Amino acid sequence: MVRMSVCWFLGSLFSLVAHAEVVEIDPAQVARLSASGVPIIDVRTEGEWKETGVIAGSRLLTFVDERGRSDPPAWLASVQEATKRKQPVILVCRSGKRSRAAGEFLSQQAGYSTVYDLKGGILAWDKEGLPLAPAVTAPTCPTGARC
Image (cartoon, rainbow, N blue to C red; front, side):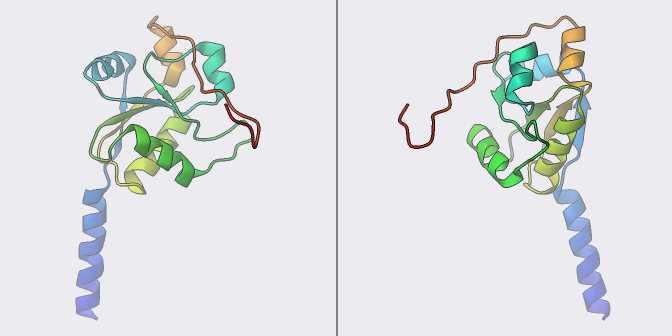
């Protein structure tokens, strides 16, 4: 019983160390980190990207769709194509709520060690007067068609 308790305690302690926290950063910090090569993932929907624009160089990977649905394993596969677990990553959404949830998923479930979240989302970025670029999304092909 004691051995089991010690194993549980050590396992719990290790899991706390293994999972990094999501760190909120302001728009100026996002700009500096992005300029140094840290990738930005915009988790908003395509409609939101087109409505406001995006931070130049962002990867556009919707975390929760317009209907409130999400597929974390599929989203993670897309994130892993753009980043590495040991590489820092910045997440952005409209106001900071969805990117926070996506960041917690990356740090707690997927083992990402450094996850930044733009505090206040794209609204904060825009309020600071920082530049937004038009959203460029990949064309979608009808089922069975070649594009």
